[in-house]
Length: 267
Image 1 (tube, rainbow, N blue to C red):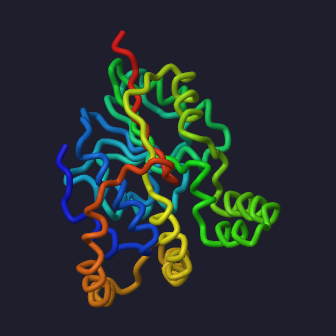
Image 2: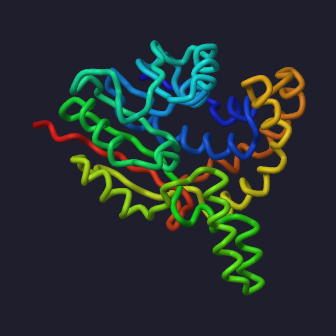
């Protein structure tokens, strides 16, 4: 697979900064990994991640949201798009060599049938790449940190529950538990680590309100940015100032996010 360069800049030009910074870090993880084809993008959403990460179309994008797939069709990052849930993929056993699920599994309430289906459609030796938040993700938020500092532990716990409910984070597991879930589905863990330091997560959380207008635009137009040319005028100077910050390493002990690479046994 060929990967694009300047993914941070591309993301900053096309979506809110909080989302751009998180996804740009994830875009740095994948180019060092093997991506044999065919490839399934499980929970592809609007297709923006695949469009920015890959320099060529990947094989399949799958998502249960028709509006998101409509936008993915416009971005043309996949050779085919399938409207369906992840527990009923309309492909034969062993069809895919690679499945990628980027910030998707935490949004699935009934996870085990989806993981079994991933195992089914993976070819022997096939690879499954996953990113998910850790339980620290909601702790590395400004409001939670403020409540903890004020010794308001019960209010902080309530805030974290509300936070996960708002963002539809149905699964909130530490890395070892995610590994066990994948192993239970029959997969072997090849690599796992946490990323997204406390500082980076806090900065992203503080930037979320700045994307309010973009969220409104997304609801109305099914895209994040209303006037791309105007976006370039004020984002590119910001990009030039902060890009060195993203040149630092991505792995972080006790990070708010988790990456796991798993594999289906060859026989």
